[in-house]
Image 1: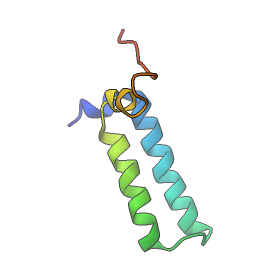
Image 2 (image 1 turned 90 degrees about the horizontal axis):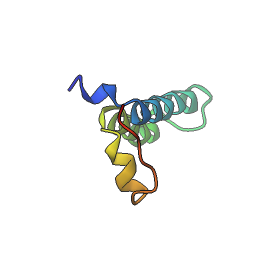
Image 3 (image 1 turned 90 degrees about the vertical axis):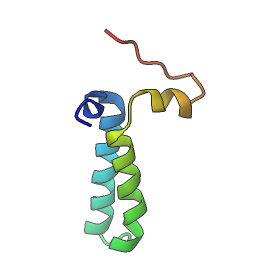
Image 4 (image 1 turned 180 degrees about the vertical axis):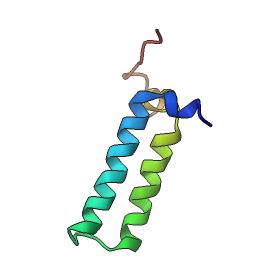
Length: 66
């Protein structure tokens, strides 16, 4: 599982989605129950490999391994 967090692109996207979910709750834009799917989507991106982005964008987004 720890190797999943090394995928920097999806981890950044996941963290941003989770922060947005918390900000929406803080500013009373949505309730805690409504933010749960958004938080879970952030968790999926946080733990996913970068190849998920290749699949979502049909191969347009490729990350070069160093």
